[in-house]
Image (cartoon, rainbow, N blue to C red; front, side, top):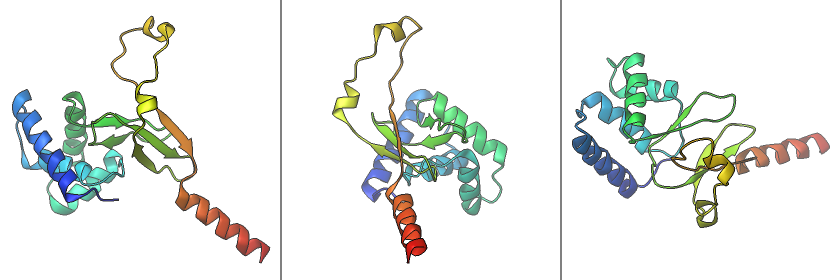
Length: 158
């Protein structure tokens, strides 16, 4: 699902500002990779980003997209989201948020929760190392998959 034009513009401004502050060159390829992530809340994997950017920039290589995603993650421009047993997904929303993951189709969507933002980290976790951030993934069945399951049940009964 596409983000609003206002949100896309905000993310693109933040991208340009952070690149300037971090001394990172702003290339056409990097801008297009970031734009692909910033324009949607889908959390695509690297291959999906490559395929979509390639439509606009036919000469871009898979390696360039993968390296660009890695560089942007290291610079804090994007977040890498790990979804168990699936390829890593990427997110241009670096604001504090959490993820809903559909266990059936793999859909990943952002949600905010002040209660989860304030969730205390147990002291036993801190003893394992330095905590950089806390992120919650909530797993369930998305409304689309639930509707499809209901429709399939009705067809079987009918």
